[in-house]
Image (cartoon, rainbow, N blue to C red; front, top):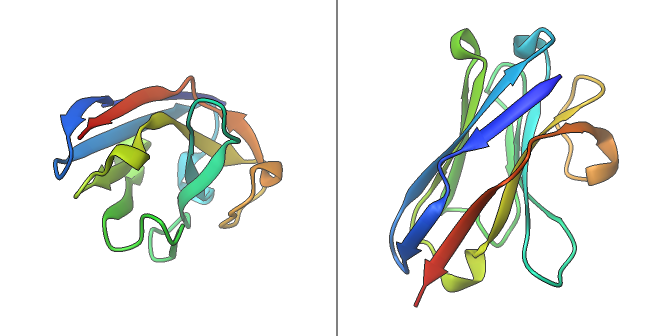
Length: 123
């Protein structure tokens, strides 16, 4: 499974970005997907996850109400719409795919990882 994330960049606080992650190598539409982030000197943390149908989503409390995860199975793509960005959202963002179908919060459930895309929010 290959995951290619894109869409990161530099944005001012209060701004928006949309991250994309294109998957290949297995049947994308039958697996949940997740987004994680890692800031310098910190552990990788969960951001959001979505079920294979797109009907089920979970979010970290820190992003709830500001970020939206979605997917387009026809395009093998998962998105992360990030609004009202804050400087503390600055991190490298990774998309990830689990080994088994499901919606997971923890890194241990994810087997495949994208290369990461940098998001920097200036104050």
